[in-house]
Amino acid sequence: MSDIINILPDSVANQIAAGEVVDRPASAVKELLENALDAGATEIQLIVKDAGRTLIQVIDNGCGMSDIDARLCFERHATSKIHRADDLFAIHTMGFRGEALASIAAVAQVELKSRQIDSELGTQIVIEGSDVKDQSPCNCNVGTSISVKNLFYNIPARRNFLKKDSIEMSHIEEVFRRVALPNHTVSFSLHHNGRLLYDLKSGNFAQRIAGVFGKNCSERLYHIQEQTEPVNIYGYVGKTEYVKRVRGEQYLFVNGRFIKHPALSTAIERAYNELIPERTYPSYFVLLEVDPCRLDVNIHPTKTEVRFLDENIIFSILRAATKKALGQFSLATELEFNPSTEIDFTPVSKDYHPEEPKVTYNPNYNPFRSTGHGPVARRSDFEHFFDKEGFSPKTESELHADSMLDRLPIDDEPALQSPVIANTTTPISYQNKYIITTMKSGIVIIDQQRAHERILYERLLARRESEIASQQLLFPVNVRLNASDSELLNELMPELERLGFVISTLGQNTFVVSATPSDVSDNDLQNFIEQTINDYKSSMLQKFSDRDKSICLSLARQMAVKSGTVLKAEEMQSLIADLFSCQAPNISPSGKKTMFIFGETELNDKMK
Ligand code: ADP
Ligand code: MG
Image (cartoon, rainbow, N blue to C red; front, side, top):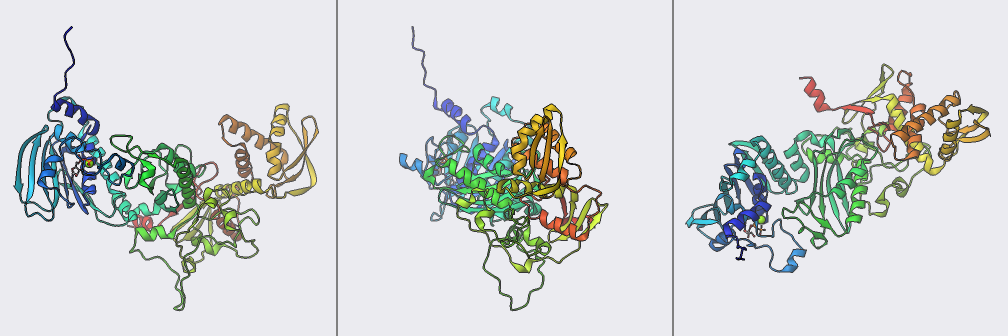
């Protein structure tokens, strides 16, 4: 038989290899933007025509290239970023494979102009389908400008596979956001068909997020920050009331690189467990920094997949840090986004000296007497609702009891102290359903029933852990059930007892309730127990993961004040105070909104 093996010509080999790196205009954009960053640019312009089909141009003011490097950079495996195999284990740059420019040049008509600061003249190269057509000296600015024209001009099959312009352009914009967000100290602009889509000036991370997603996103985010040995965490996570039905704005970066990391995304989402309705997703913008030698970025050609050596611990730290961010309202977030905004300070006397930054919760306040919960949301806004007397102090570790944070150094972000107290307003009721009050962020409308459900739910959960005493009934109440419900009640007995019920069996299918949690009235215990069992049955059908929680939910629902109940002003005030001491004040335990905040900007808009 004759020999049948051929060595592929370079041009074909290059085209095949190119497919791995450049599969659509957006991937070429990513490589070019990353090269500009690696070159140390502080200003990067991206100019696109026809969604990248006819032109992708990146202009940077980075270090530029010499004549020889300008020619070499289009060779496969040509890179200035690693020298030895060892370097692979401590990657500090975005690129290092030396493949991108070779791949792009194999499938497009490329024109490169580059000049280094100490050269008077730059160099210009024209290359088409890997063939160098021309190299000559030229006048140009310091830095590099690279134009990629007619992508896939020599691979019609690929070109035909491109989607319509709007789709390709949305991929390009997404790449642009992923590169621009973490590199907030670099200025970026993006033009498409002559239109300026983004103009991002150098600034802090918050300003960059606002530049990309719009100014009012500051209202939707909490600050997250944690410095630990294996990882530093910095960024913003969405408030629970602004979750989305689709996983939209979820950005996780490690050492300045956008990554897809399902486990770490889960870590963030877990922190929202029970705080947000099912099948909704929080937004987040989180920068992680880890020692490059404890990170493997080498597992995927486009490098969005990475591996952490300390994945498990980073998972726990990230989840805990997110929880902490959600439990703690930070005025600093709003200040950072909007440095020029004046905050509504109550006038302070001249000899007022601001204290050192401190934790935002008041350790002397315990909303549930002895069963209080952790740091509160928007605490500073509601200081005026808190009755400061008669509360037992809580230690920090108690406050963080159910989070991982007690194992981590907790360095609290600066919080503004007493001058931030809002003016006291008397809450009013609308239709005996809604309580209306004001706070710094706007007019708050609270659903009294849902709010009370939230308060009771957290109180019950807390009680479950501390086994707080119950109220003895003066006259124990008999409860008679059918056979299957009796069985269920026996099953639920340990949980009910932990919540403060004392129930004993009197005979077959008959029980005696001799004590209840203090907020349960003994008016209709028969009904109460039946309803609890019913809720338990339906929660089993819905596979409610935690049966304790399902019981707390059922009790909270039954015990809560109902819509239509007339509340006194003091009752409304303490409801508001209790609500804002909850870990998740924004949402009822069954996943509905407890409140709506009408901010000043919104109000001004409506009044236009
Ligand atoms: P990699 O980025 O993996 O090294 P590339 O093919 O993207 O591989 O680039 C090859 C080399 O070309 C880089 O290592 C760098 O030395 C040089 N280079 C590419 N783009 C630029 C740029 N915008 N400014 C300066 N040098 C560049
Ligand atoms: Mg590169």
